[in-house]
Length: 100
Image (cartoon, rainbow, N blue to C red):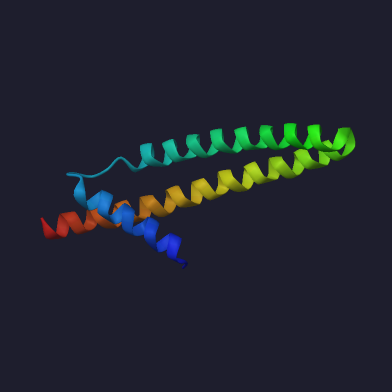
């Protein structure tokens, strides 16, 4: 585990513990998925356009593919961070039930 993962889980624990009642995990996951998808698509389009403008058609297509892969990687990263946050929220909800 790296420091970012630990920080995200701790933030999720604080979020789950500080809010009364059980959180809606499905909505948190759905919102994270939508945000990741939108950001990934925007970055893929920007990468495709910038690659095309800089290097001409053939190299632009290659640059666009690389930009698209960058958008896909960002989308996957956002989903992983969302799942880590939900794990923290679940732990926070469990702690809330135990302590309160």
